[in-house]
Image (cartoon, rainbow, N blue to C red):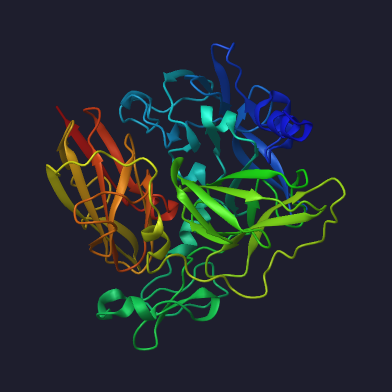
Length: 503
């Protein structure tokens, strides 16, 4: 074994290597420890020279999040050190229903000062954890949850964790008050808190082919109307709690291989990941392996994750990994740098707006799972209609909001197909609790041969405006599982229903 190989393997596998990860204070779980502590607590960040009071999920070393070894159980004591109730969802995992982390479904939220124990066998991959109270997620109550596999230990590569978030100094209540902009549709004042909207009633056939473009990444509609992709302008876009004014510099070695584990924990922002001068290989989405897909730009929506491999040049250097806000010029990111690499200042605004993400579902259609669900005939097929309006600001599933929702009923063990049909003029990242699913078709057509499933395995799927995506899964534990949009303002206004699994 060469010295170079040994050093890189050490960086990828030892506890001391956490200093080389993009979250240097993330606690790497020790197999000897019977339980790990997480605390929901307040913290203060420096954002643009201003103190920002936010929330976080602190581990026993004072860092954010948790990394588990292969085969290790998720054995965690969660303490609520906040002065308000909270509840944490283990996004991407399939725990017993009473540990899923949704308030009153079935367990009550944790009261201030209360602790609760969790114990289950986790799924390997890049996952995360966050409050299932949307206003708290908007206040950054989220952190990485990385479960490493035997393959991860065997690979000769350094791992870098990158969590992306959007932040506002205004409270969630203020943001929501400003996002509901009164009667009328059409292009809005870009100086306002929310960007424009348009009435989808005038939609015509083939409109999706004309929807990309326009100022600020707007999506051009008919009759000269335009809808922007973002309805909140945040004060900052964060990569590992920092902006490009003071980005994290991750130490790497010349000629090394890096695996980026990237989490979109933003409340209302879709990002493109731009690897710049280094071509990347997308090797997993939502913690599940896909056939490698090469490129320099990959997009993902709120709640989704990307694993991207990079082979670094043999020379000294510095390589920015940027997250570009969909439809806008704002960007954030980190910098990978060798010890002698020259690091240049990077502006927080790009020269031009990033385009709309996957409006034609081209990226999703190109993904192929390395391990597919078994081929089975569907016992149940359901259409899930997604809709909503900007005025009033109201987002629905099957024309209903939470509290007046109509659950989807299935039986445990059934193969189920859901077709998401988005009739609104905003995209919706749809997340299903308690299950993983596989993408079967996009735009009303199968990705692979007829009735054969070979799209990506996921837990969150991006449904662009006026489009359709079909997923398949095997219904699991008999219980009530949440199905909702991961755009927090949409969720706040009721875009959630239940998958009710019976025996």
